[in-house]
Amino acid sequence: MPFYSSHPGYGRLVNTLKDVLDSRGLSSFKLSRTSDVSPTTARKIYSDPSYIPSPDVLEKICITLEIQPGDILRIGPKLETTVAMVLGSGVLPSGL
Image 1 (cartoon, rainbow, N blue to C red):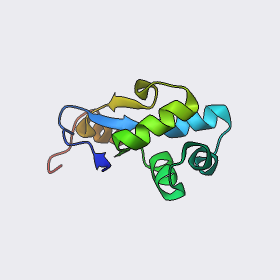
Image 2 (cartoon, rainbow, N blue to C red; image 1 turned 120 degrees about the vertical axis):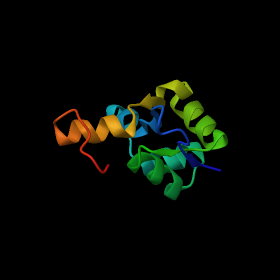
Image 3 (cartoon, rainbow, N blue to C red; image 1 turned 180 degrees about the vertical axis):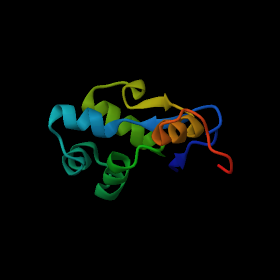
Image 4 (cartoon, one colour; image 1 turned 60 degrees about the horizontal axis):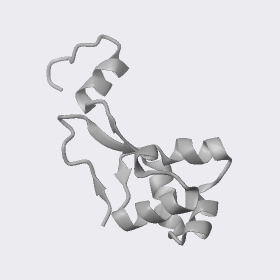
């Protein structure tokens, strides 16, 4: 069963499948057809970096693309760091 990162305070697990597919000129639909992953699942992983595929789906994708799981998954910055960077101040406003 897919999941979202459960430890956002320590950094968050993100998928970079979009970057991998875009660099190869592949679509999520093409990946779904060649890896035996549903088109809905492939599209969800492609379009939502916080969506983490199940181990079975991750294995199918890695075998198809001939890559390692670490080529798709990484630890991103903490959510608070991301918010502070977006606001531009580097300091969290009170209330967040």
